[in-house]
Image 1: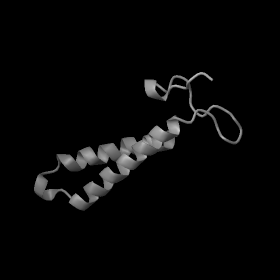
Image 2 (image 1 turned 30 degrees about the vertical axis):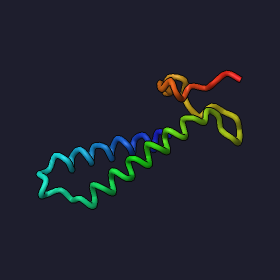
Image 3 (image 1 turned 30 degrees about the horizontal axis):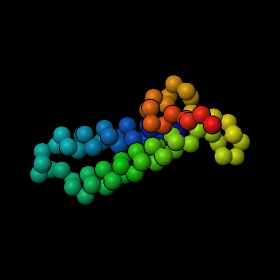
Length: 77
């Protein structure tokens, strides 16, 4: 999932850059599209972090230190 996380960072930087422009010079369509994509990527990452193992092979998908959110921790069976 590092691919999605890096894309979120890049997209966030572009949004900040677009918002730093004067209001009359902003491209509203582009800004709305970027924000919509950013929201969907964050949602995808959040849902993917809930899955702890690969459904095919059973190997762990995430490093233990990369899952810092308390709500995404695995529950003991």
